[in-house]
Length: 429
Image 1 (cartoon, rainbow, N blue to C red):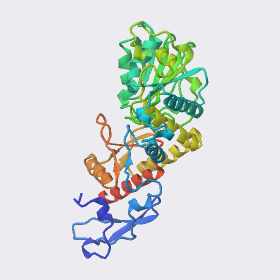
Image 2: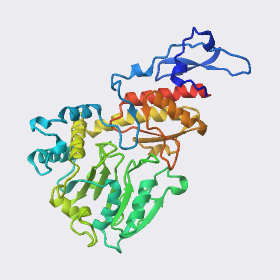
Image 3: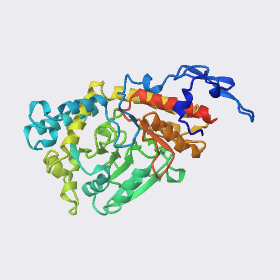
Image 4: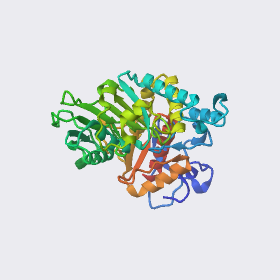
């Protein structure tokens, strides 16, 4: 590929005789409302003449993203709503006339208590969480819950079932081996974690204390669209929802426990949210560290020790913003629209871009894709960075690219990415 940037190449004026060639076969790109012509390649010198002037993408999306900010496609920590960041900025120095920042408050003072209580109340409203459940704001990331869950809900000889659809489900299973008797009843590893099983394709242990799933695999981009039911009538369903938490409505009553790291969809890193049915706490194993005991945290309203105060405050602002958008029904509609735009661009590229995930279980949040010619992937990522689109490199364990399009990613960000994908393909075919 020419060392000149993709953007610069596309914007060169057609009047420059050194930048003109002949074209055949017009191609129309609907998302840009412009027509491109594919150049015919030959061994003879050629010239290019643009059929239409292409607008600089930095000027076409500014209505929904400030000029000085990038479109951040990171998997987590991830992009946050711009209006939430601006509100936090305005309150940073002096929170609502208190004379201090949230970062300076005592976690037991009335000011912070009001913040954490409102955050919980708004989250309950978003997910319609009944009074049968505790909502806990904890620390340690979802990874800490891989140990906390069996320590609180099992004895050392209890059997539990795991459906493993990706890297995080596998990590949860391996950690549980230290504290109970877990069994993988289905794994997608042999097919490189590209699907979710039909629920009649595996056999559950009728005595399993719980059935564990990862509702959305951040790395592989696989998402459950509905949820299995434990075969044990006294068993419970547990879900790691870290990367699709609050991205759509969920019937919490189907679960005994839901947990999520906040840093993907609802806040900064440092906060872990646990939603647990009240009757499930109080039976932790004797070896359970005090900081992993759900009853300790529930009895102390998530204030047993100093919590991640500022992170909880930020989560509260995000919850408030999601409610103002119309709740999770509207949020889901927005997310479907963004995901469809990106997946359609991949699927209509004639194999130039490829998504390995089975279409019926593709994630609305994390979109992995590769290029037909893998040697072009580094160039694509560089060109994206020049266009102020960052963190598109895939996870180190799988390679390729990954676009995380969480709630806070504007539609304009996905539009801009799709425009680059089409432009890049045109220059490489």
